[in-house]
Length: 233
Image (spheres, rainbow, N blue to C red):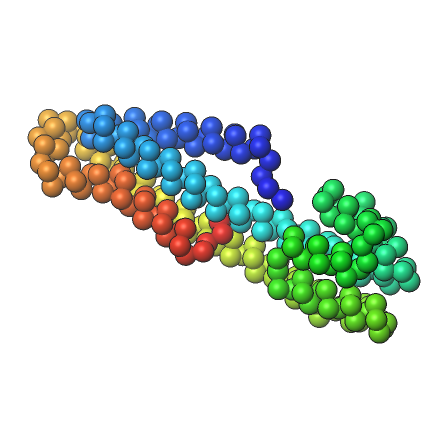
């Protein structure tokens, strides 16, 4: 389930516009076009290939989890009224996207093969439990509703936990970005309210490096933190 091409182009366009604004801002602060362009390139790379990618991954994970929950609920409820597992798969197939629908409706695949194909899509530990549950039901029978109660509860818990982590991580990143922007604002106020003083101190190598750190390094560290912490925004 990949983000469609048009949506990805729109996101890239938005990032490009924001990057241009960032370059203009960096130019105003640093009075150096080369430094501003270098920082703009770093900014674009981190936002487009780290942060946006993580946001897409997080959204995709939640969508897959919702789809898996729908599949488990639909198949289990259908099995409560339909004796044949293959007939049950065909009945519920119309509620899913084409990739899943093709697997569920394929007469050449037995239930074991169907579960194997779906396991490649829903890469959650709980799917293995779901697969084992279906295998036990097919081979030994039983009350599918009672057998699946714990599994469905676990899926509900995983969905809620994933959504909470997703929102919490986005909140943390927003807080860091807000602090970063406030630092920007302080420098901009200094730039225009005390212009002559600013022109003098920016000639200092120490102050110039400090501004470069503020503009680029802190945001780079944010991107690296998101990348290596495993956050799915």
